[in-house]
Amino acid sequence: MSVSAEMTLLFEQAHILCYRTFDIAEEIDLERARKALSEDSRRLKLSRENSQYIQLPNPPVAYELGRRALALRGGPVTVDATARLFDHGAASIILRVPVAPGTTWETLTHVADELYDSQALDDLAQELVEGVRRTIATAVQGPHLWDQSESYTVIFAERIQGNPSAEELFQRADIARLLLGESTAAPLAPREREAVTQVRFSYTAHDLVVVDWNSAFVYEPSGSRDIPDLLEIANAQLLEFRYYDERLDKHIARIHDEVQARKPGWLTLFRSPYRNLARETLGTLVDLNEFVERVENSLKIIGDFYLAKVYEGAVRRLRIPAWQASVTRKQQLLAQTYGLLKGEVDIDRSHVLEVMIVALIILEIVLAFGRVFQH
Image 1 (cartoon, rainbow, N blue to C red):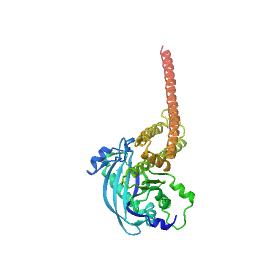
Image 2: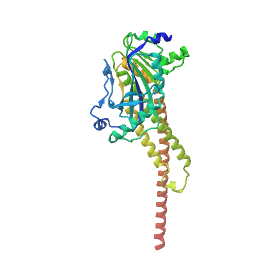
Image 3: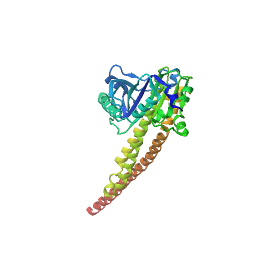
């Protein structure tokens, strides 16, 4: 792909949506959060035709955080900041970076490369999410801030000079280089370019979506934000599965350590050393079941149409099924471990009953001998 071909592709109206998604609670009461927020808070609602076939049982709540200055290598830029809250405990910070009219493809690639790993952007998002946590403190259950987050970037173009068709744009522009932020002169290998752009969709001849694992390119002349919204929901789901995968790892490791550290003694005849551990394990399983239900119900597809295909393609590209399978496997392992712990507790309880029965028998014998000696 020649540089001259890319140079003729000038962005007339575009912006870059930078998402930083955090896990801030076990659950967020969205209605209570709305009351704690500003009046311009709103529920997410998809607007495209046939969007009624994607159901959001408890749509996330978004509200504006105002404008902020973001330091970039080319100088500070003013970005619009938005927060979006999900009932399963995630909070997304969206920073909308403007793209100046007349920006070339090559220039945008350099900007995207900086934004993908911008420490200034991460710091700003961290500062904003701390403010969000304070604002909605009364609406959360189990507040916390996980030390990991999920980042995603959407290059959103509404108008490109010459109004190219989707096929023409795909052929002329090096979308793979843009999504990778690859600003060096060396050309990408054909296999790598195909791997990056394999998940792509078009509904009409003049719109295009290309989804990669940490970025996406959306060419949408209508200006509809439905596809970036769906990509954000998918990233929030990915974050939650990652969070619970780590939580399960820690709980399973703690069970192993505590079981190894327990030493049998005469006190275990009266109280099982695994009683509290079994109770905590059961609580984790209950919490996990509620979490999986909330995440899986955050978006339901009831029709095979364009938005559904984009969402399902994004889910595959983000490797959500692999994380979900990991959580499910560890959930089953934890359930088996709980069964073993409960079995130990039941055995210890039966030992207590046996000791009590033996003690009663001995007591009866002693009392019987006492009565005999009295006569």
